[in-house]
Structure formats: C-alpha cells, structure tokens
Length: 382
Image (cartoon, rainbow, N blue to C red; front, side, top):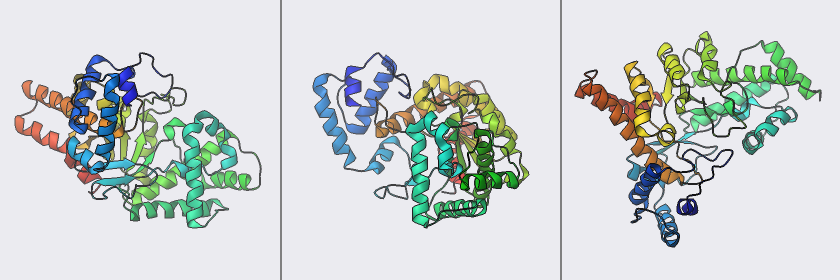
C-alpha cells in the first residue's frame, strides 16, 4: 500500500484491483487526510523518502489493536465477515458474520467448473467445508444427514456469537434459487455417492434445495443473511445478470421464509433502484451501502441515499465501509476513509432534503441516527 501511494501508477489492474485504481487527485487527498487521522502521518503527499516513516507509523499503530481504529473512525461496533473471528478482537466491538457458501457446494468432484471459474476464491469454501467435517467428525452419506449437518453448523455459528451469515455465491452462480422437490435433490446426492457423473444443471438443483434449507434455518434462528448483489470487481468471474437483486424476488415471496431477514450488500450497485424497490415491497429486506462510500464520491452517493430516503426506506438502510486490504490502502485506512465519506454523503443527502423542505431538521437528525447506528442495533439485536 505504501509503495502504491508513493508511486501512484497510472495502469489499472485487469481483474480485482479495487475501486479508485488509479487514484484521482481528490481521492489521493482524501486518503492523505485519512493517513493523518489514523496514523499521525504529517505530510500532504507521499514521496519515496516518506515510505519508511509511514511504514513505521502503520506498524506502531497496529500494536494498539483494531479497536483503536474503530475509535478513529467513530464506529462503536463493526461486523466482520470472515471464516473465523480472530481471538485478539474484542467481541464487544467486533461481531462475527461467517460465510454460508461452503454448504451450497458439497459435491467436490462436481465442483470442477466452479473451481475453474473462480479458483482463487472457491477453493477456500471447499477447504472450509472439509474443516467443518473434521471438527464435527462426520461425513454425511445421505442428503438428510447433510442437511442435518448444515443445520447444526448454523446453530453452532449462532451459539458462538454470529449476528448474520453471508452468501457470496453471486460470484459463482445465479442468485435465482428455486426450491425444487426433495426427491430430485436426493437423487443427485445419491447419484454422486455412487460415483456417477453429475451434470451442471442437476447440481444447480441440489444447490437450490440446500439454499432453501439454509435460509429456512436462518429464519428460525433469527440469523440475518447478507447477500452480495450487483457489481463485483472480479470482472471475469461475476455476471451482472446473475447477481441482480431481482433474482432474490422468489425467495422474498416464499411463504416459508417470511421471517427471514435479508440484507442486500453494497446496495446492489448498479441496481440501486431494484434494491430499493425490493426493500420497499418486502418488510424483511434491508440495504447495506458498504463499499459505495469508497467506490463513489460523496456527492454522487448522496443522490442514491436521497432517493432511498425519499422512498421512506430510512429504517432499512445500513451504514458500512467494507474495509478490506487493497493495492492502495490497508483495511484500517479504508475503515476511516470510508466512514468519513459515508457521513459526508449522508449529510449532503439530508441537508439537501431539509433545504428543499422535504424534511425538518429534527427528521433529518433522526434519520441520520437510524442509518448510522439504530437500524443495525435493531436488525442484529446488538
């Protein structure tokens, strides 16, 4: 990260480089401000001779722990989407959101096309499922046993403090999960067990069936489900059509899933109106706008937020940063940078609505508190 900010290369990586690559001047200035706030770096720009100083400040800052980063960002509680919550993180401030994708793909020999499409991520889920088998000391031989195993794993997640689970499968397949007959799913599972070849469309039917079992369990456990919808930077992997939030419409309308809470991650961008419509039509759909503060300048993001608020979705909006390591920033830096830009965007949206006499000052203040804090406390029962 230090080297990237120093050299400021003009070339953009072909796949997965992250937003803001290459950096515009305004973005670079914003990151320099975040460097000052977070690490106490005193310069307005980075030159080669500054690398050692900044690196030293970053390493010194990390000795204080990540709770200090949340303090700098003005964040009380952070949700951490990871396979395991690191033991050094304060569980009062860092709440766990494990993945659930690993349970959707139990037929390892039939994962070839998925692995070839996104090996850099998909193999992680295969390994995590193997690890879950080892910990539970089981190897399900039938679909009934496998579904029981998955239900037990989700209960264990809840018991260990998970506040939600995440589905990242938009990077591997369509989000259009269609509940099929149990008999068809059993047939695929037993066919695989007998070493016979499984066609892709057959495997998809099994995944659909398992997805509904996962979602039903999450509904019973009051465990919200985060779903990545929309744009993804791994451009050769994700398909916009497959990742549209509209693919989730049949799930939202299914009578067995009325209690399920679904959070549309990253606002479903570029399908922001589709996300808003889905949330407006379904009491159990919420919109998280993490990553968008980093991807989109505050003024432009304010237009999206303003439209959602105009639709009276303010009780369904959730602030986030999606702080991850990128070529140009550490996860700590993105936490501070993203939080500041999110607040700027929301301020612009609400102040504009007050100026246009669409909201009173009191209403705008109440909405800001909901979006930045209160909605999350209620949805995740924090």
